[in-house]
Image 1 (cartoon, helix red, strand yellow):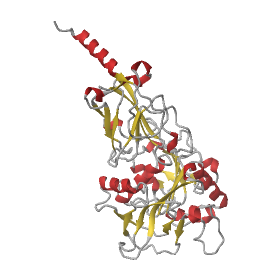
Image 2 (spheres, one colour):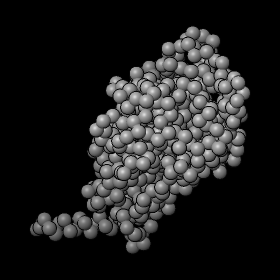
Image 3 (cartoon, helix red, strand yellow):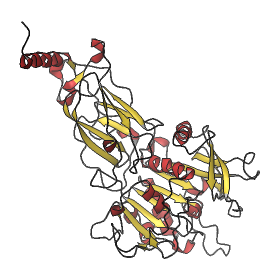
Image 4 (tube, one colour):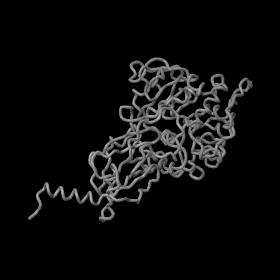
Length: 465
């Protein structure tokens, strides 16, 4: 006589428990699932529900999906996905020394990271209900619970759950500072990547958002009835003049001002910016903000000669380089850049390049001629043999970790310099209201390239452990 349905369910449940194995992982970032199992009576928490499917000739219990930028359309590379051992807890406030060797908050029973298509498969997921799942890169973090995970099957993650948060109502965002510039509009790129308008405020707003706007010589206020903040932006100098102000932010964006403006970036500011990066801050700067790396060299009167320590030797600059081209063929460096292969593959996957490694850039600049490969990573450059017209040379994007004078294992921060401006018609006219100058067109090829670097700069420093 057959079992009744309730008794059959009970028997199956007992069999499943008998097959359960437990594994522990105290942190780190190895994408390979651990093979070390212990007896079920020794396990704890969700580890008790990790089923050894292979012993039954079945596929592993997995969760899969594609992680998107907050805009929901751009897949992202290198995003961590994991099942925490304990609650990760709140993220620390402000700039931190975020090394990959520190591991993941809360540890991980199992973990992986997204590939060049933004796709992931997380193996050996606990087969039970309300399983916690963390999606994180830097301080972008979404935490969800998987309501029901069936053993030895795949659980596809819904798009709504696999997109980085647009606002703090959806999850964690880094604290971002943006200075506006009349020659570039990095704030428009950040907005295109999907951060909610409500998160753009001033630093002194009654309810500050995740993105604080400061005025260089670009936009200086919000349009009327803005969803985020209101009123004029504080001057950029109030941000970069002291390390105490800078270290409140995880990432600082400096938009090109069409000149170095050395009178607004004196030696104390030079010292503060370097100190901020050295203690773990992230900086993304464009074109004439090369002053923070090379020093004040544009002024021919020699009234200004301030410069940071160490950084001037990272690159070779040519302040007299002509800037006449509206477009330029640039090359992705797959040879010297440790993420060059992944970057090149990702650019193809998102439609930014047709021919591998060849990226068309609008309004290129040639201030940076070269970088020291022992001190910086070259991401995108101009090859004089392939340039249009031929003979142009320069580095469009490079990254270095900080303190640059310290051994690689002791570095905490990241600095990106871009000689390419945001394209697709976005502007930030002097004294205008944000976001009037921002284009609504889809991400251009170079905006996609900058987006990859933007999320990479958020990630931990050093090799994945």
